[in-house]
Image 1: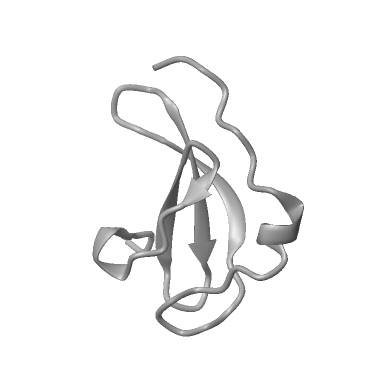
Image 2: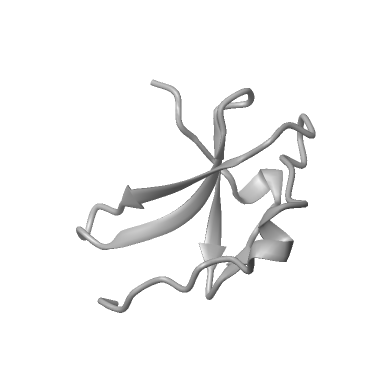
Length: 69
């Protein structure tokens, strides 16, 4: 998939919080193994990254990936 990722609506972006710690999340772009850019929301406190699929954040702790080493 080589298409640009839709952005999150500003009104939604203002209320999104990490489902684990309720802290703020920041916008980020990660690179998959295939080299594709993936939009995600990262929680610096929990060190979890939540995927954004089609402009919709998937805020499920079970589907988040760890960002720490």
